[in-house]
Length: 262
Ligand code: ADP
Ligand code: MG
Image 1 (cartoon, rainbow, N blue to C red):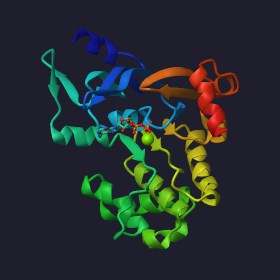
Image 2: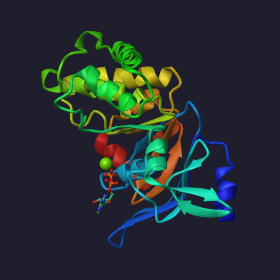
Image 3: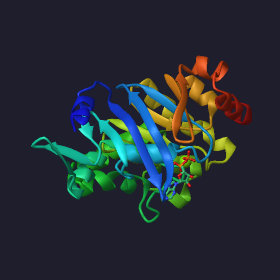
Image 4: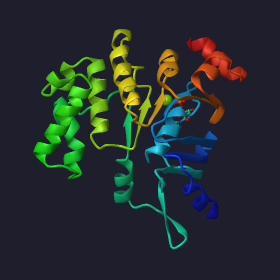
Protein backbone atom coordinates (compact mmCIF):
# COMPACT_ATOMS: atom_id res chain seq x y z
CA UNK A 1 0.00 0.00 0.00
CA UNK A 2 2.60 2.57 1.03
CA UNK A 3 4.60 1.80 -2.09
CA UNK A 4 1.57 2.61 -4.23
CA UNK A 5 1.13 5.94 -2.46
CA UNK A 6 4.78 6.77 -3.00
CA UNK A 7 4.56 5.79 -6.64
CA UNK A 8 1.52 7.89 -7.41
CA UNK A 9 3.35 10.93 -6.07
CA UNK A 10 5.95 10.86 -8.87
CA UNK A 11 6.02 13.17 -11.83
CA UNK A 12 5.46 11.30 -15.11
CA UNK A 13 2.23 11.55 -17.07
CA UNK A 14 2.25 7.77 -17.44
CA UNK A 15 3.97 5.80 -14.70
CA UNK A 16 4.37 2.05 -15.00
CA UNK A 17 5.97 0.38 -12.01
CA UNK A 18 6.97 -3.24 -11.75
CA UNK A 19 4.02 -4.45 -13.78
CA UNK A 20 3.47 -8.19 -13.99
CA UNK A 21 0.78 -9.89 -16.03
CA UNK A 22 0.17 -13.58 -16.76
CA UNK A 23 -2.26 -15.35 -19.02
CA UNK A 24 -3.03 -18.91 -18.00
CA UNK A 25 0.13 -19.25 -15.94
CA UNK A 26 2.38 -17.77 -18.62
CA UNK A 27 3.97 -14.49 -17.62
CA UNK A 28 3.66 -11.98 -20.45
CA UNK A 29 4.81 -8.86 -18.59
CA UNK A 30 7.61 -9.55 -16.13
CA UNK A 31 8.24 -6.40 -14.14
CA UNK A 32 7.91 -3.48 -16.52
CA UNK A 33 9.03 -0.02 -15.41
CA UNK A 34 8.37 2.88 -17.73
CA UNK A 35 7.79 6.56 -17.11
CA UNK A 36 6.54 8.82 -19.87
CA UNK A 37 6.76 12.58 -19.41
CA UNK A 38 4.14 15.03 -20.68
CA UNK A 39 4.78 15.78 -24.34
CA UNK A 40 7.17 12.88 -24.71
CA UNK A 41 7.01 10.52 -27.70
CA UNK A 42 8.01 6.95 -26.88
CA UNK A 43 8.42 4.26 -29.52
CA UNK A 44 7.90 0.76 -28.19
CA UNK A 45 9.72 -1.86 -30.22
CA UNK A 46 10.18 -5.58 -29.85
CA UNK A 47 9.48 -8.92 -31.41
CA UNK A 48 6.02 -10.35 -31.83
CA UNK A 49 4.73 -11.78 -28.56
CA UNK A 50 7.03 -9.67 -26.39
CA UNK A 51 4.08 -8.05 -24.61
CA UNK A 52 3.79 -4.68 -26.39
CA UNK A 53 0.02 -4.79 -26.97
CA UNK A 54 -0.64 -6.12 -23.49
CA UNK A 55 1.39 -3.27 -22.01
CA UNK A 56 -0.57 -0.68 -24.00
CA UNK A 57 -3.82 -2.31 -22.93
CA UNK A 58 -2.93 -1.98 -19.24
CA UNK A 59 -2.56 1.79 -19.74
CA UNK A 60 -6.07 1.97 -21.16
CA UNK A 61 -7.86 -0.17 -18.53
CA UNK A 62 -8.40 -2.91 -21.09
CA UNK A 63 -6.20 -5.29 -19.12
CA UNK A 64 -5.73 -5.53 -15.37
CA UNK A 65 -2.29 -6.11 -13.87
CA UNK A 66 -1.38 -8.91 -11.46
CA UNK A 67 1.27 -6.92 -9.66
CA UNK A 68 2.68 -3.41 -9.79
CA UNK A 69 0.87 -0.22 -10.74
CA UNK A 70 0.00 1.97 -13.68
CA UNK A 71 -0.95 5.61 -13.21
CA UNK A 72 -2.03 8.20 -15.75
CA UNK A 73 -1.68 11.79 -14.59
CA UNK A 74 -1.55 10.61 -11.00
CA UNK A 75 -4.65 8.40 -11.20
CA UNK A 76 -4.20 4.69 -10.64
CA UNK A 77 -5.48 2.33 -13.30
CA UNK A 78 -8.13 -0.02 -11.96
CA UNK A 79 -8.01 1.10 -8.34
CA UNK A 80 -8.50 4.08 -6.11
CA UNK A 81 -7.23 4.87 -2.66
CA UNK A 82 -9.96 5.48 -0.12
CA UNK A 83 -9.39 5.58 3.62
CA UNK A 84 -5.84 4.30 3.13
CA UNK A 85 -7.02 1.19 1.26
CA UNK A 86 -7.07 0.18 -2.37
CA UNK A 87 -10.52 -0.35 -3.80
CA UNK A 88 -11.33 -1.66 -7.24
CA UNK A 89 -12.84 1.03 -9.40
CA UNK A 90 -16.47 0.93 -10.39
CA UNK A 91 -17.19 0.46 -14.07
CA UNK A 92 -18.33 4.08 -14.46
CA UNK A 93 -15.10 5.42 -13.05
CA UNK A 94 -13.09 3.04 -15.25
CA UNK A 95 -14.93 4.39 -18.27
CA UNK A 96 -14.22 7.96 -17.20
CA UNK A 97 -10.53 7.29 -16.66
CA UNK A 98 -10.34 5.38 -19.93
CA UNK A 99 -11.39 8.50 -21.82
CA UNK A 100 -8.12 10.13 -20.73
CA UNK A 101 -6.19 7.61 -22.80
CA UNK A 102 -6.82 7.39 -26.54
CA UNK A 103 -5.89 4.25 -28.41
CA UNK A 104 -5.54 3.57 -32.12
CA UNK A 105 -5.39 -0.02 -33.23
CA UNK A 106 -3.88 -1.76 -36.22
CA UNK A 107 -7.35 -2.47 -37.61
CA UNK A 108 -9.05 0.90 -37.46
CA UNK A 109 -12.19 -0.46 -35.76
CA UNK A 110 -14.45 2.28 -37.12
CA UNK A 111 -18.18 1.77 -36.87
CA UNK A 112 -19.03 0.63 -40.43
CA UNK A 113 -22.59 1.98 -40.37
CA UNK A 114 -21.52 5.50 -39.34
CA UNK A 115 -19.93 8.22 -41.48
CA UNK A 116 -16.48 9.59 -40.68
CA UNK A 117 -18.05 12.52 -38.86
CA UNK A 118 -20.50 10.31 -36.96
CA UNK A 119 -17.66 8.03 -35.88
CA UNK A 120 -15.86 11.02 -34.38
CA UNK A 121 -18.83 12.61 -32.58
CA UNK A 122 -20.11 9.31 -31.20
CA UNK A 123 -18.07 9.27 -27.97
CA UNK A 124 -18.34 12.98 -27.06
CA UNK A 125 -22.12 12.77 -27.59
CA UNK A 126 -22.56 9.47 -25.76
CA UNK A 127 -20.62 10.85 -22.79
CA UNK A 128 -22.61 14.10 -22.98
CA UNK A 129 -19.41 16.07 -23.20
CA UNK A 130 -20.75 18.24 -26.02
CA UNK A 131 -24.01 19.17 -27.67
CA UNK A 132 -24.67 18.16 -31.27
CA UNK A 133 -23.47 21.35 -32.94
CA UNK A 134 -20.30 21.69 -30.83
CA UNK A 135 -19.48 18.02 -31.44
CA UNK A 136 -19.94 18.52 -35.16
CA UNK A 137 -17.68 21.55 -35.15
CA UNK A 138 -15.03 19.65 -33.19
CA UNK A 139 -15.22 16.72 -35.61
CA UNK A 140 -14.89 18.95 -38.67
CA UNK A 141 -11.83 20.56 -37.10
CA UNK A 142 -10.29 17.16 -36.36
CA UNK A 143 -11.03 15.90 -39.87
CA UNK A 144 -9.30 18.97 -41.22
CA UNK A 145 -6.35 18.26 -38.93
CA UNK A 146 -5.92 14.75 -40.36
CA UNK A 147 -6.36 16.04 -43.92
CA UNK A 148 -9.87 14.70 -44.50
CA UNK A 149 -12.02 17.83 -44.38
CA UNK A 150 -13.84 16.67 -47.51
CA UNK A 151 -14.68 13.18 -46.17
CA UNK A 152 -17.03 14.04 -43.32
CA UNK A 153 -19.97 12.23 -44.90
CA UNK A 154 -18.06 9.23 -46.27
CA UNK A 155 -18.63 5.78 -44.80
CA UNK A 156 -15.58 3.68 -43.84
CA UNK A 157 -16.06 1.37 -46.84
CA UNK A 158 -15.72 4.39 -49.13
CA UNK A 159 -12.34 5.29 -47.63
CA UNK A 160 -8.89 3.81 -48.18
CA UNK A 161 -7.17 2.07 -45.28
CA UNK A 162 -4.97 5.12 -44.74
CA UNK A 163 -7.99 7.42 -44.68
CA UNK A 164 -9.83 5.11 -42.28
CA UNK A 165 -6.87 5.11 -39.96
CA UNK A 166 -6.75 8.90 -40.06
CA UNK A 167 -10.44 9.00 -39.10
CA UNK A 168 -9.62 6.61 -36.25
CA UNK A 169 -6.93 9.03 -35.06
CA UNK A 170 -9.39 11.94 -35.24
CA UNK A 171 -11.87 9.87 -33.27
CA UNK A 172 -9.27 9.10 -30.61
CA UNK A 173 -8.52 12.82 -30.30
CA UNK A 174 -12.19 13.79 -29.89
CA UNK A 175 -12.14 13.15 -26.14
CA UNK A 176 -8.96 15.20 -25.73
CA UNK A 177 -6.97 12.37 -24.16
CA UNK A 178 -3.92 13.12 -22.05
CA UNK A 179 -1.96 10.43 -23.85
CA UNK A 180 -2.48 8.68 -27.15
CA UNK A 181 -1.45 5.07 -27.70
CA UNK A 182 -0.82 3.55 -31.11
CA UNK A 183 -0.63 -0.21 -31.59
CA UNK A 184 1.08 -0.85 -34.94
CA UNK A 185 -1.03 1.82 -36.64
CA UNK A 186 0.36 1.14 -40.10
CA UNK A 187 0.84 -2.64 -40.03
CA UNK A 188 -2.43 -3.37 -41.81
CA UNK A 189 -1.90 -0.80 -44.55
CA UNK A 190 -0.66 -1.18 -48.10
CA UNK A 191 2.84 0.30 -48.28
CA UNK A 192 1.75 3.30 -50.31
CA UNK A 193 -0.72 4.32 -47.58
CA UNK A 194 1.71 4.15 -44.66
CA UNK A 195 3.21 7.61 -45.22
CA UNK A 196 0.00 9.60 -44.87
CA UNK A 197 -0.74 8.02 -41.49
CA UNK A 198 2.82 8.47 -40.20
CA UNK A 199 2.62 12.10 -41.28
CA UNK A 200 -0.46 12.68 -39.13
CA UNK A 201 1.24 11.02 -36.15
CA UNK A 202 4.39 13.13 -36.69
CA UNK A 203 2.20 16.19 -36.68
CA UNK A 204 0.71 15.23 -33.31
CA UNK A 205 4.22 14.69 -31.98
CA UNK A 206 5.29 18.12 -33.18
CA UNK A 207 2.40 19.75 -31.38
CA UNK A 208 3.37 18.21 -28.08
CA UNK A 209 0.85 15.37 -27.77
CA UNK A 210 2.11 12.63 -25.45
CA UNK A 211 2.42 9.49 -27.56
CA UNK A 212 3.34 5.87 -27.00
CA UNK A 213 3.71 4.14 -30.34
CA UNK A 214 4.21 0.45 -30.98
CA UNK A 215 5.71 0.25 -34.45
CA UNK A 216 8.01 -1.73 -36.68
CA UNK A 217 8.70 1.41 -38.71
CA UNK A 218 12.22 1.97 -37.46
CA UNK A 219 12.88 5.01 -39.66
CA UNK A 220 9.75 6.63 -38.31
CA UNK A 221 10.70 5.83 -34.71
CA UNK A 222 14.08 7.42 -35.32
CA UNK A 223 12.44 10.58 -36.67
CA UNK A 224 9.64 11.20 -34.20
CA UNK A 225 10.50 9.42 -30.96
CA UNK A 226 12.25 11.13 -28.08
CA UNK A 227 12.95 7.70 -26.67
CA UNK A 228 12.97 4.15 -27.96
CA UNK A 229 12.09 1.30 -25.62
CA UNK A 230 12.81 -2.34 -26.49
CA UNK A 231 10.65 -5.04 -25.03
CA UNK A 232 11.59 -8.70 -25.07
CA UNK A 233 9.83 -11.50 -23.21
CA UNK A 234 7.90 -9.02 -21.12
CA UNK A 235 10.84 -6.95 -19.92
CA UNK A 236 12.46 -3.71 -21.05
CA UNK A 237 15.85 -4.85 -22.26
CA UNK A 238 17.12 -1.55 -23.59
CA UNK A 239 16.00 2.06 -23.90
CA UNK A 240 17.40 5.42 -24.81
CA UNK A 241 17.58 8.08 -27.48
CA UNK A 242 16.78 6.69 -30.93
CA UNK A 243 20.21 7.52 -32.33
CA UNK A 244 21.93 5.66 -29.48
CA UNK A 245 19.69 2.61 -29.31
CA UNK A 246 19.03 2.14 -33.02
CA UNK A 247 22.58 2.75 -34.21
CA UNK A 248 24.44 1.24 -31.26
CA UNK A 249 22.22 -1.38 -29.66
CA UNK A 250 23.89 -2.96 -26.65
CA UNK A 251 21.71 -5.98 -26.04
CA UNK A 252 22.18 -8.94 -28.39
CA UNK A 253 18.42 -9.39 -28.74
CA UNK A 254 17.98 -5.73 -29.70
CA UNK A 255 20.65 -6.22 -32.37
CA UNK A 256 18.97 -9.37 -33.60
CA UNK A 257 15.57 -7.64 -33.81
CA UNK A 258 16.96 -4.61 -35.64
CA UNK A 259 18.83 -6.80 -38.09
CA UNK A 260 15.51 -8.42 -39.01
CA UNK A 261 13.39 -5.31 -39.43
CA UNK A 262 15.89 -2.84 -40.90
P1 ADP B 1 3.01 -8.23 -28.88
O1 ADP B 1 2.01 -7.14 -28.99
O2 ADP B 1 4.37 -7.75 -28.46
O3 ADP B 1 3.08 -9.08 -30.11
P2 ADP B 1 1.13 -9.32 -26.97
O4 ADP B 1 1.10 -8.40 -25.83
O5 ADP B 1 0.03 -9.27 -27.95
O6 ADP B 1 2.55 -9.19 -27.70
O7 ADP B 1 1.19 -10.80 -26.45
C1 ADP B 1 2.16 -11.28 -25.55
C2 ADP B 1 1.84 -12.72 -25.24
O8 ADP B 1 0.65 -12.77 -24.48
C3 ADP B 1 1.63 -13.58 -26.46
O9 ADP B 1 2.21 -14.83 -26.22
C4 ADP B 1 0.13 -13.69 -26.55
O10 ADP B 1 -0.25 -14.90 -27.15
C5 ADP B 1 -0.29 -13.64 -25.09
N1 ADP B 1 -1.61 -13.05 -24.89
C6 ADP B 1 -1.97 -11.78 -25.15
N2 ADP B 1 -3.25 -11.56 -24.83
C7 ADP B 1 -3.73 -12.72 -24.33
C8 ADP B 1 -5.00 -13.14 -23.80
N3 ADP B 1 -6.03 -12.29 -23.71
N4 ADP B 1 -5.10 -14.42 -23.40
C9 ADP B 1 -4.07 -15.27 -23.47
N5 ADP B 1 -2.86 -14.95 -23.95
C10 ADP B 1 -2.68 -13.69 -24.38
MG1 MG C 1 0.84 -6.53 -30.58
